[in-house]
Image (cartoon, rainbow, N blue to C red; front, side):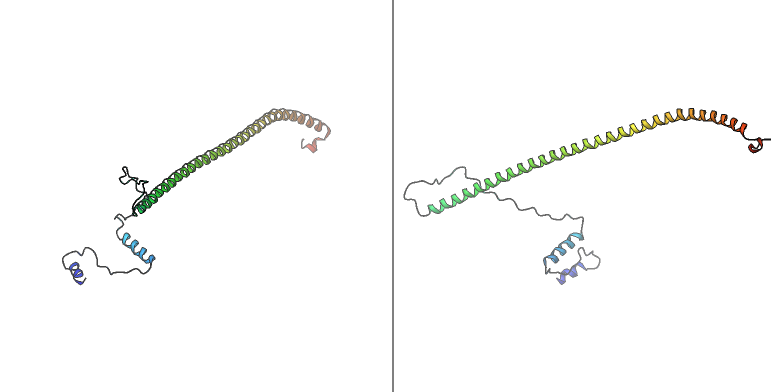
Length: 191
C-alpha cells in the first residue's frame, strides 16, 4: 500500500487517482451513502443500473421422448423416481401456463375497465359541457334581450323626452306669461 502511495506521489508525474482511506460501512444507510458519494464524484460517468430478475419459465417439454414410460410390469425401482420428476415438471409447466393465462385475462379486463371508465368520463364531460353551453346561451340571450329592452326604453325615452321637453318649454313660456300678468314688474326684477 505504501509503495502504491509513493508511486502516485512521485515528483513530475500527475498522481491520477488520489489515494483515499478505506472506509468500511457499518450500516446499510452508510453503504448507500458511500455508493452515492462514489457516483457523484464523476457525474458524467454512466451509473450501472442492474436489470430486474428474469421471470421464471419452465423448461420446454422435450420434442422427442426417448424413455417412454411403459405400463408393463416389472419396471425397475428407479423408474418411479424418474416418473415422479417428470410428473412434477409437467405440473409446474401447467401451473405456469395457467398463471400466464390468468395474468393475460386480468390485463385484458383491466384494459377494458380503463376504456369503459374513459368512455364514462367522456360522456359525463360531454353532458356537463352541453349543460354549460346551454347556460351560456341562456345568459347571452337574456343579456341580448335586456340590451334590446334598454335600447327600446332609451329610444322611447329620447322621443318621449324630446317631445315632453318641447311641451314643457311651451308650457313654461305660457306659465311665465300668465305669471307675468299676475305679478307686479318690480318683483320680477323688470323696470
